[in-house]
Length: 128
Image (cartoon, rainbow, N blue to C red):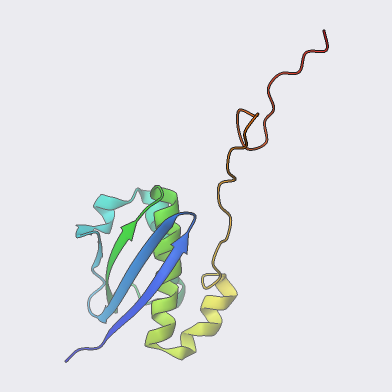
């Protein structure tokens, strides 16, 4: 039986569940081709861990992504992909760490506060 490696990636409110198998470089996101799911720039960012290691044609990637928007989902896929590659081969940890792909980007949208129109913005002040 062929080995399958699994990892979870997160970014903003998006969560990506990523599975890796030895293969020919096919990437499916939510049962659609990655080219169909993501735009050009975002796709490049999402698949950066594979490009960094030069393994674009060595692994098949299958993932489900939920929550957030396109940018957050691409970041979650990148994080999950890097973690899955480390599960596949521990030697990949150092280049993944160096590229910053294993670090969970904790930046989130700040919540809106009451008495204000947004998170930080205030209503217009009138002295008179």
